[in-house]
Length: 128
Image (cartoon, rainbow, N blue to C red; front, side, top):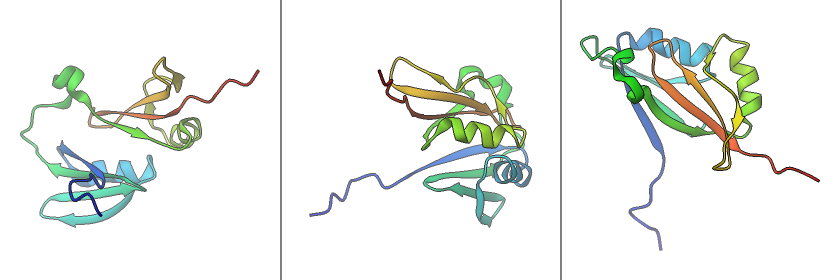
């Protein structure tokens, strides 16, 4: 029997001043692909991660959001390989990747609009 309340996927919604410019960054730097453009929105996706970028020129500037600049936590297969890939394309990696006590190897990235997103993969087991 199917669980009709099961979660299927997660999509992030970001208010940005220029959805096209922001989408171009997600595509050229972060490796996403455009999936839909409609009514001032641009949707991008990479594997199971989807982001909806909406035109909100009057929204509070992202730098004014403080700790609320973070919008998501995305698990990737190999955060170190992804770091190498996006660093070479000019991504602003805030720190890391680095191991955390909670079993994740994390890397925060800042978008050109100032949003921050955390990418992570499980900490590799230490071999004796």
